Length: 150
Image (cartoon, rainbow, N blue to C red):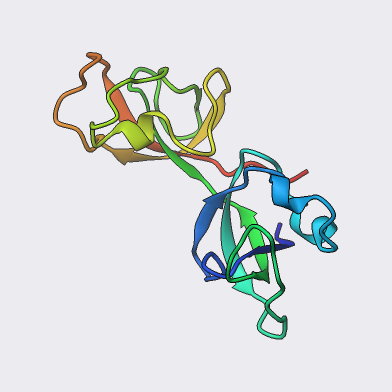
């Protein structure tokens, strides 16, 4: 299901993904609050359509303004423990990792997914991008199912 919202003009391209972080300090008193603050905080979204008939609106948070777009919840790619990781199963993230220089770090701590939450695996992507896990974890790169917006 798609939702119409406002995003910064730099994000207003079909296929662009972002994690909605909620209200910012500059949003107070904005006349577009209801159109802009209508997503679920912490969730990853993908732009599916840009409203071409819409105009660019001034925004205190986005220096080049905002545009109306349609978005839908997007799947999240993540590294999860290999044991029990198969399409259709539920799993959680393995836990925090302090090794920010590792090529797998964005998948071990993915934006749009939380530690301690369970997610259904939509599909197995394959091996993680790292050669060796510094925490000696046996991991598989998967794509979590996009959540419903209900």
